[in-house]
Amino acid sequence: MKIYHNPRCRKSREGLAFLEQNGYDFAVVRYLENPLTRQELLSIIEKLEVSPIDLIRRSESVWKENFKGKTLSDQELVEAMLQFPKLMERPIVVHNERAIIARPAERIKDIL
Image (cartoon, rainbow, N blue to C red):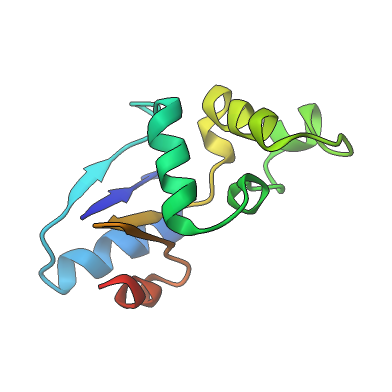
């Protein structure tokens, strides 16, 4: 199991704490420090069973300044997240072939 984690995000810290408190074996991926590859991001999107726009944090200033109001293809949205990893919703927990945006943290149970 992996958690894609941003330590500055309260919801991400809550997801990490949930995994720790429940004794799950997992790896932490600090995706802002170690950006995802295109293949990793596409794999996560597939496991989440969402469109790329559903993984975008549209409240982020980088979204508002660079992308708001534009019509972007899925490929362009993926490129935006690769260029600006902060745009990704968090935390994301991946377990085997399933993934979830763990907001709230208890949603993690849904993929176990």
